[in-house]
Amino acid sequence: MSATLPMMIVGAIAGAATPAIAARFGVAARARPWIVVGASAGAVLSSAIPPAAAAVWALALAVGVPLAAIDLGAHRLPDALVLPAAAAAAGVALVGGAPAAVAGGGLLVTAYALLAVLPRSGLGFGDVKLAGLLGTALALLGWGALAWGTALAFLSGGLMAAALLVTGRATRTTPLPFGPHMLAGALAAAVLFGSEGTQQAVDVGAVVVQVG
Image (cartoon, rainbow, N blue to C red; front, side):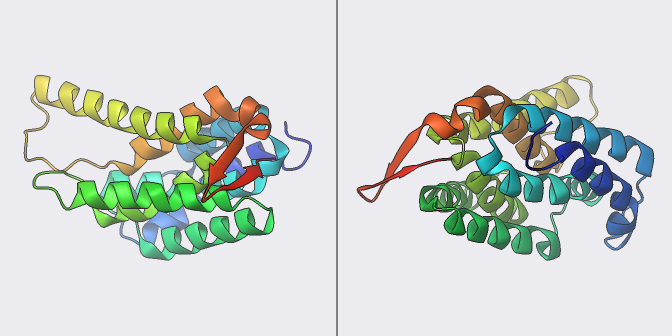
């Protein structure tokens, strides 16, 4: 586990709180599966990300677990969870001397917003707002993590949609939750790039910021 933040405990607490949080948005959820999900994600993150990025990723984990349950159950990502977490992540990144990470969050929000307004995109503005949180967390690990986290989210979502179409469990017009795929893509990218995050330099607006 990380020496600075026990991610596994954060994930387990988030999972234990998920039924109560989800119930506020009309979604029924059982605690045990989400505790397992949260603790497992926390264990993965604690071994992958550098200590300098731990606080932002803890925020993403803490809200990501209940958001996944709510999106799966109600196809929504409530502002009451997403917006405070995204703002807090940006604030932590700025205080930590990583404005490039905030720029990464803004970049991902812009990209998702452009996709969301396309006809038949399937993306909602809850996804756009979640992109702000995940973009900041991913950009702390480098631009490669930001790019791959985004690509893996769409790959995961596309494969799931294809599987549901092939099995007849969905049609081309069936709304499908995308938030869990965004979270899974971010987690996978953290594993791929986390150990390199503190060694990468990112250049935004001619200002070089050493991440970590």
